[in-house]
Length: 222
Image (cartoon, rainbow, N blue to C red):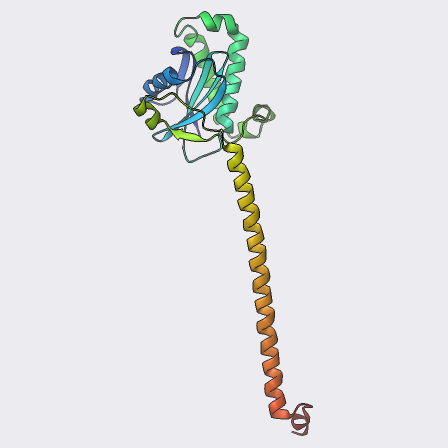
């Protein structure tokens, strides 16, 4: 999973952005920004075509990035990246400037930081670094929705992780049942092998006894 695009916005106003590739995703992000519930802090992930949009809302500011590979369900690196640029942005500008700045006021200066940190979090070393791991403590499985449906229906983006805990519990129960089933099947096979082995031994003894006598004296005389 590679981070390809990022922005920081206040409502619909984009304060800065950076993209490593070309495409129509800036248009998609503008539509998404207009539908994200204001005043509700949180994090979400949404699928669009062959990409996934991840965002964090904190104190009326939206930190968003786009990644490829929607089949990859672990979103640790994107959210670690978003937390990192959030901290850097607020340290540099503060909340007051962020809440009053006009569109693209920070783009010239901060787009370079978006790129630099994007390159870092896309590197193989980032996943193993302690700095990244510290950002992942509150990141768990994030369920995703196809954003096409949201845009077509004109609905606001809804929380999709309400049932995550239930799903994880069900998955644990299924995994435990699977282990028990495998264990039971293994013992069934062992018992079957022992039964077959016993039958073969008994059959050999029976044939030998019929040919040599039960005390095998017939075979001894030969």
